Length: 396
Ligand SMILES: Cc1cc2nc3c(=O)[nH]c(=O)nc-3n(C[C@H](O)[C@H](O)[C@H](O)COP(=O)(O)OP(=O)(O)OC[C@H]3O[C@@H](n4cnc5c(N)ncnc54)[C@H](O)[C@@H]3O)c2cc1C
Image (cartoon, rainbow, N blue to C red; front, side, top):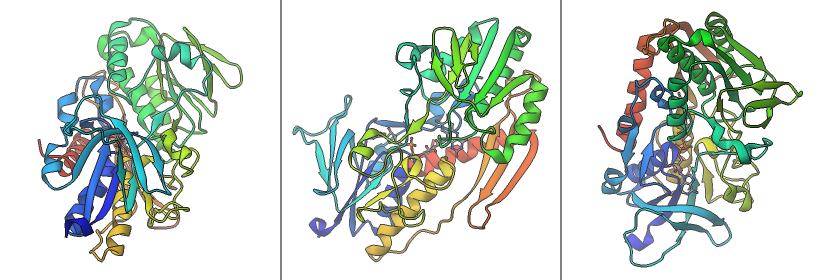
């Protein structure tokens, strides 16, 4: 019987990849063999990484291994996917640098269905000087780099902090704003805020997401954070950034998020230039190959790139296969509630947050928001993040 099972390969063991894999195993485990190929033997959640700057979050709380997922019936392969051959229905990967459990040098997986969920690449190549000066930038987006940012904001005593948001789409729209406001709080806490300027340069016309841009502007005015919108950073050197109109801003700390895109193997397989093209958000098959589906941040969807949308798109991708194989699809719709860290203007290392929501089941999408920063929203966000990790990986 096992040989008759359809082979579903999922690229990327993140929120979208694991949501798709779990849904498939739970609903059509007898009809499909589900393999997740992912590059690291652990997953670290994104949403609360900014709180590593204040010490309110720690790596151990947001990190999970794949052992329990494997025990539940998902085949896990550690490998770095480098190429897809849609004609041959094959995924190629290089060996994981840290873990192996076969004596062969298997480096490809054949599939009947492929779900692509590799997340994003932070690509600074369009910024002049990035190759030489990348190490001067830091951001809350990646482990390691967030530690660099943390040590810089906790050790330096005066200067200018420049925070940069690239053109949309990029993952987690409000994270640059969160970065600016949390840095503001840390500098206040240290008693050095008056010796620093904080400048948020945003390539977009408003801070993202636009639905809360008015709230952010008010809090920035109160915090004394300067906001420059509608201009890209096109060049960096050892002490300054240059905007597209030639304005030069000197920095001492640079929290720069690079433009985002899907990994290169997507474009090389003809599946989309920057993002994976899909037919519709609800049936996210690629236009050229019905057996390839996309989910999560790497998919080209008309929605923000965030954890809720990643999860929901994964359920839609899984449902497309489940329906085809005669199973019961999971209930899902495109709608989310989110929380945005707003720092703490009193300089306490107790981050306050606002809440907003977008419901894409109505046209136009229905927005909701509460403009008052609250401590409870920060705690809600923590519970929400933990619930995803507990369900997709294992409880802690
Ligand atoms: C700092 C930060 C703050 C955020 N804040 C929020 C928030 O407040 N609210 C919210 O909803 N969302 C937030 N997000 C966004 C959220 O984390 C992402 O939208 C979500 O993780 C996307 O899921 P994904 O599965 O597409 O990508 P990921 O979760 O990134 O998973 C991709 C997986 O693919 C693997 N992979 C990548 N390339 C390869 C390859 N070549 N071969 C094999 N494996 C590969 C990666 O290692 C990873 O495990 C935040 C993200 C960050 C980083």
